[in-house]
Image (cartoon, rainbow, N blue to C red; front, side, top):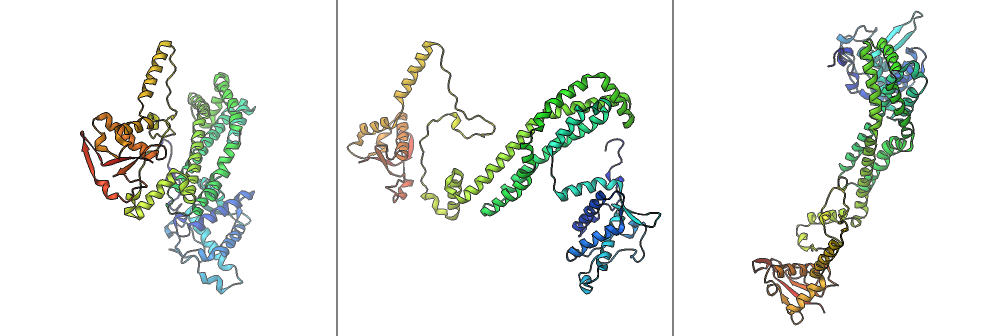
Length: 502
């Protein structure tokens, strides 16, 4: 625990959070927000009759939802009102109580009074009797931050990024910073921290929505995915915080002016000394400590505004990933054959549903434009997938040598025409030719591999088709031969036969 602090639970009463952990925590929270709204509207304290009237209206609307519970122990009660029980109170509400007296509001007021007394005993509120005998309900000083937080959560956490940037600009670049620089720097530092905190919360909110999307079952309906995207994500992120962030240019407009002003203030020794003296008086620290703290806050404002771009890029990246994942999930349900992922999912589902279906799936090697190191799968976010093209040699001799090497490689390339000619020369024009008659060494084995690839992938553009262990459209009934293998010249292979296409 930092030096000089007493701790949260050393300041708050022991039973402070008890109402918010009870069965009726939802209603206690509603009563606290109701009080805070009246407190904001009242120029003075909140009068008890006014508060009881609002509480009674709430009870009348929600009496069927209020659970029976016991109030706080008598040891936490400083004083009790006449007619209350010393140890514990009975059920807060009897569902039949209002029904027995349909025209009376007294039962609702009685229940509202019990809720109010519980909040007073827990330490959220206090009661004061004025000289004119009127009774006022006051807010406990240590409870004010909790009231503000609950009110913000209840109304929705809307973040105004523009207000934070404008506040920093107004405080540091205005005339007030000249005479009251310590106040300006303190408030500007708080607004800068609030801006960064809001951006981090937005980034985490997008991440939470993305995890919610990925946790959805694979059997989820399209309406469930659309609900997550258009009802939840769009309402919480796109139409709210993210839209305000992307449509506002105040950050880019005011940031250069703020950074310039911070540099000017840091270099103005007279202003720093004067502001540090004023800051020392209000913060009860020495002049040197105040000067160091004031300088550190200005430097933190400068460094924070400079480092905000990576956070904005991370927010954009997460939003893009969510949108892409959402669209792909919907597309996979509506048009499973429209993407590679959908086709793989369809095949996997078919194999799971029918264990024997795997034998009916033919595997093929398809044509590619270029095969290089970049053909391997890589994470597109982290690596550049552009093919590496060698630079043109500057020396004419090197250029001629490179051209000769390229022509030599092209002449030796095992193209479909060259492989087809090799099969023709091996007797393929007169009869079907078996693999055992083709393979004699490593070179002929490589040519055999190319012949298999071309026969399977270029059925309309290659002069030979395969008979034997590999299943083709013409020989699907010969699955039993798939296990028959031969060994020739040290190489093991399926028993294949190449027949000239007519």
